[in-house]
Length: 279
Image 1: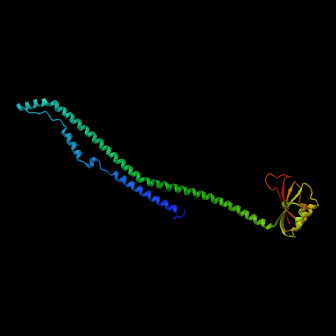
Image 2: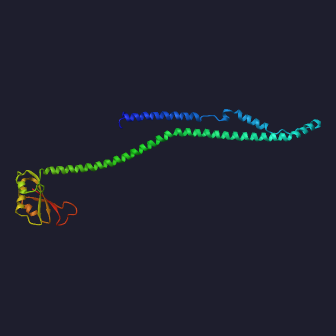
Image 3: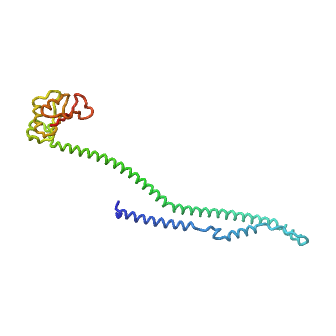
């Protein structure tokens, strides 16, 4: 997926282009539909006609004047006054209804246009918001990746130090090779040592006595080990108990360099320990 020409990545790019094109078409359609004129803007004559209707709905005043003609006009007016007043009340109610309806219609149209404009602005901001969230998520993912890489680097450093230690241990063991393990070989250790030429071994691993003085066979075993080891070679003895082996080992020509318990919890005088002697 890191390859910019990967087929799966190309398919995603094509899908993204299609979705962006469809989104742009929908946004343009909503924008066109939201740009409409209100009735008061597209037909201003409606307001003029309403004002004229309001003026015409005012009641006609009772005629005035003196003389016979004035008296006749007033008597005629009084005769038709009930019907005129009823018509005037009807006209006033009708005009009030038209005024209220137009006011509500204009308010509704204005809210619809405001709603359409807000919808367009929302649609225009959806993509930037999503893009910003993706950028934040990408930044957080990068930060998390950096933390993981840093932890991985620390682990690599620890492993590198461990490998260096193991390499040093390998080199140290390589300096003592070949190693003859008499415990694993079993049988008569003296026979195994006699089969080795003088100075051919780097290290010998054997078992020591358990709470008893070394006998003649054991002294002979150490003598054979001293013969088979080259100068600087090691004799490693796994000893049970508190028997001191320094004197007999030195008598066989070895120098005792270390005597320690092999692990925690075994530091008792009678516990197992390992004695290292150098030729």
